[in-house]
Structures are given as C-alpha cells and as structure tokens.
Length: 493
Image (cartoon, rainbow, N blue to C red; front, side):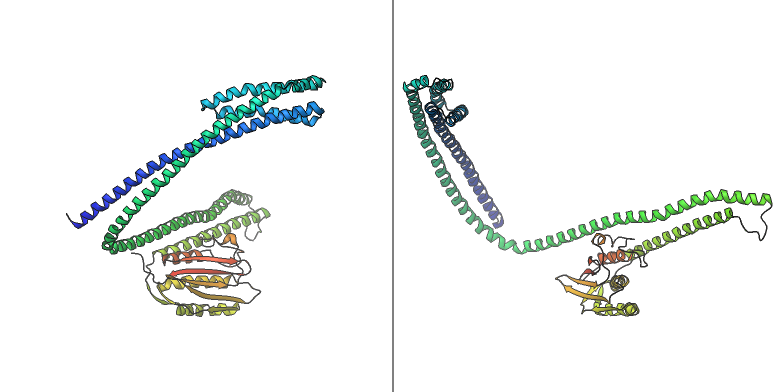
C-alpha cells in the first residue's frame, strides 16, 4: 500500500474514532444534564412547596393574631390584619394544589390539611362576626373554650409533618442532582482526555502531511487571494459603472428633454401666431393699406415681437442641445481612446500645467504651491487632463475678496499615491458633494461659464486609470480634491 494512502486511511480512522468518542460523550452528557435538570426541577418544586406551607402557616397565625387582638381591644387595625391574612389563605392553598398535581403523597397530605384550615378559618370568622355585632363576650367564650387552640395545634402538626416529609424528599433529590453532576464531570473529563489523546496523534500525522503540502497550499492561497481581490475589484467597478450609467441616462434624458419641451412649446406658439400674421397680411392687402414706407400697426408690431421672441427661444434651446450633445460626444471619445502606460514624472507634469495657467493665476492673485511629487506609471495625457481640470476649477471658483491659495501635496501608501489639490476658494455645500461628479451638474451660484462636464470627465479618467477621487469641502473656507492613483498602472487586457 502506498504511503499516501496509508496516511489517508490512518487519518480517516483517527477522525472516525474521535467522532465516535465525541458522539458518545455528547449523548451521555445530554442524558446526565437532563437527569440533573430533572433533579433540579424537583428540588425547586420542593423548595417552593415547603415555602408555601410555611407561608400558609404564617397567614393562619396572622389571622388568629388579628382575631384575638380585635376581640380583646375592638381596634380596627387588628381587624384589618385579620382580613388581610384571611384573603391570602385561599390563593396560597390554590398554589399548593398546583405544586402537588403530580405528587400523590403530597396531594393526600394537603387534602387532609385543608379541612383543618377550613375549620380554623370558620372559627375565626364566627368569632369576628360576633364581635362585629356587639357579642364580644360570646366570642371570647368561644376563644376561651380552647377549641380554636386545638384546631390550630392540629394545623401546625400537620404542616410540620408535611415539611418534614418534603425535606426528606429534598435531600434525596439533591443527592440525585449531585450524583448526576459528578457523573457528568467524570464523563466530560474522560471524554476530553480521549479526545485530547486522539488530537495529539492526529496532529502528529497532520504535521507530517502538512510539510509535504505546505508549499502548494501557500501558492494556492495566494492565487485565491489575488483572484478574490480581482473579482471584488471588478464587481465594485461594475457596480459603480452600472450606477453611473443609470445616473447618466437619467441626467441626459432630463437635460435633453428640457430644451425639447421649450422647442415644442414655442413651436406651438408660432403656430398660433401664424394664423394671426396671415390674417393681418391678408387684411392689409385687401384694404390696399400695405404700401412701401407705411409704418406697421400696433397689432402687427406685437405679432412681430412675439414671433421673434419665440424664434429666439427656439434657437437658444437648439444651441443648448448642441452643447449637451457635444459634451456627451466628448466623453464618448475619451472612453474610446486607448490609454498607454508609461513612466510619468508628476513634477514635470505640474510644471507644464502651471506654465499654461500662469497668466490666469497672476490675474486672479492666486499662489500655487506644488510640493515635491513622485514618479508613477500611468497615461500621461489622462493625468494632464485630470489635474488641469482640478486646477482650472480651483481658479474658477476662488473667492474675490481674499488672496487665493492652491496647494498640491502627495501621500504615499503601499500601493497608491494620494495626490491632493486644496484651495481656499468658496467651497461646496455638503449636500452637493455627491452630485458634482455627475454629468451636467454644478454646485453653488452659477456665475461662472461651464456646462458641468469637467468633474464628470475627471472621474471617468481617474477610474480608467485604476484610481478613485473624493472631495472634502467647507463652504467659504475651501475645497480639497484627493486623487488616488496606483503606483504602477497597466491597461486591462
């Protein structure tokens, strides 16, 4: 038999043996736990039973004490004590009946006790009723006859006997519970010892097998981790792309529909004006009033103005649609362009961008500080478009009443560079932070030219470069865009 097969059979035998021991230990433990629980329930029932007996005895005594105090003094507090104790006796007896439902011996003893309790309560009630009707002497005669004392002595004797019998049962039940606990401890100890012994043997066998397969497992684990990371990354990308497509479809349909609605509305207005203009023209020609150099009437002037206004709105809406469609085409071309991975010196990249923006920076009194930046592998043109857009935004939305400041910094992580572009401009409201990356969406006061495609374009480029972008901003204090870029990016195959 081959060594590998022998090891496999040995491991199977050890596992089967360990499993069998575990099953036996579990079954025996469950049985012992159940026995201990049953004994515990019996003990609890007995304790409750004896406690109720003692309570019943105390309630009868309290009733008797209240009766005698009331008969001797006639004071109402003693009568209230008697009545309170009397009300408790019935429920206590009822609870004792419930506790003895499955205990015939206790049921019999309780059945023998109840007539005595009833007789005592009748005697107490009779004397109290006599005292209430002014026959206190007759009531005291009944008390002095010792009949009530004899009944109470019989009640005490029976309750004492019942408690003594219950305490004997309690000792037996407690001993049973203790024995079940000791047996359970012994079974668990032996079971744990056997399982530990089998575990040591199995561990030695597994250790020998592990040495042979450790290298292969490590390679497989690394491959699985890489695969999981790639799947998670692709899943996240697909989810983000799907969300972005849905937002894009909504925004495009909404923004393109708006000028179309305007065109349709003003076209309808032109149709309405057409009849008026034709009627006016026909009327003037018929009357022979339309001659060269004759000024148009007020009605004609109004119609011309409305007509020209409708045409102007239609042209404006068509122009807006043209700009929106051109913006969409621009993003589409960006998505189709083939990116090329190459070494990019970010210091030189920002030097070139700064040179192109120097006039605007000087004109707006803005200081641009670019801290030392690293070199990475990425698409240079895409990076230039990303950071040109971010710097252009920072300049465009700078506050007018203070000197502007833009700082470019970098943070190095294990796999990415986090490049931040921070300014002290007008800032962005928290409610607008998520929407500024959507196509045709702009935040704040719209007093600067633009179509709302710059940041959407930036996000598209950054994602294609395998990175991400986020924004933090405080209104009237400034905004920080942080672009996370992989140190070594390669186009997806």
